[in-house]
Length: 526
Image 1: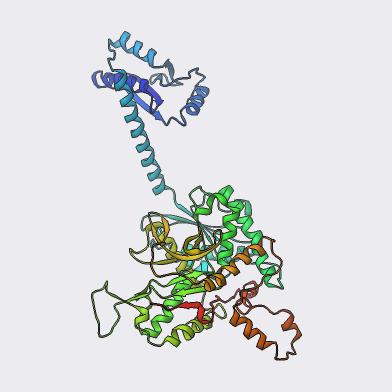
Image 2 (image 1 turned 180 degrees about the vertical axis):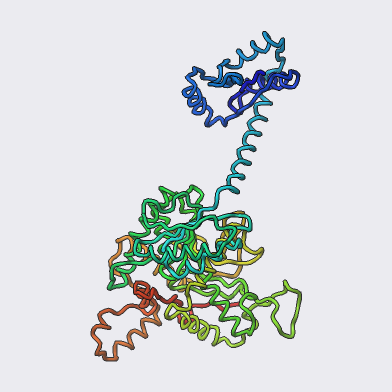
């Protein structure tokens, strides 16, 4: 039996002509077999060079044909290229080809298209074989404990996608992470291929498809807000360098938690510039708290409230916008089908509650950070990832921290929470929404802190000065008339909106989610 191997560049017209002759011979001669190999034009030369080096052949063009010695074993016998194969076919089998040049070119292009389709199919099969690599930083944080069961349930990445979870943290957390690995394995989830611990920095994010950045731990004690902000930069720089070096080109990075979420996202974009378009900040936790507070007021369930927009600093000065907020299936005198909704503001007649109590109640819930715990953080991250992979509900507004490109009058270059929708594996900022203009004063209040945070973190600004409106300054003037006996408190005085930011560095890892407690913190215009 004669077995020949025909290999060539996928778009080579001479390969196409040799292929036609080989197919004819195989069809009409019982002892003639042909095995065909095509390579993409971009890799053909390198592939041919390796093949010739392995077999000690000398050949430089496409195609290359050799005979496999089935009866004797050993390496193949080089026949040559296109001309040598046609001569062999004519001499031994009396067969030649009359294919025209134009037809050769046409078939060559068809071969290239077929080759690309086959390669895509192979990649799809590899995706079924190879698990999705998910990395979680600061994996000893409470949110990770609650996040793992959600990730392995199939609700986030799909019911047929196996995942491998990699828990990344410091060496000091290794014992806790080992215990977490055992619990994750006890789930016996069919979608959990493996779960492992990584404490070596150089190994972090290797082959990562998804990177989840949780609240980080700073080992050294800090004594000022500025030190607290600056402590974020070295770790983000380390993460950024490792992401650039080890992660897959298409890796998706999502930043969650309750401390400096916008700042950490901006720093990661700076230190991992090739991934900046794929780094986002989770805002659904704040959005969920707002919906829950509204639901308690309206005596309904939070899931029925949609389109609450969170603007600005996710873990700092933000702006809760209810102008587009709607409630579905609300029990009242007016009733409609499941897709019927009513504006939230039209159902709350107590404007004092909207402008004051609503904002104050949210701040009270998060004053210690305990209510923004592991469950809410995990659910917010998982939901955002699910939307990123499979799209958000049609017509629904989602709040997300992304890099500003000047939309809505937001200064460029800062990470800002704004309304988006997810579709086709990415997000789109909803710049076409009507009647959502933000006043200059509110915009300044939100952007001032974000800009200063970034400058302080990069060492370009020494002192952080929280934004104060004229009303705040007037209140401050009143306070100066009241004598104080606590010198230490006066010396370490920090804006109320930031005074709890240090507590995430304490052993209990607690910090409040800051919401403005003045009437500017929410929009109620209709």
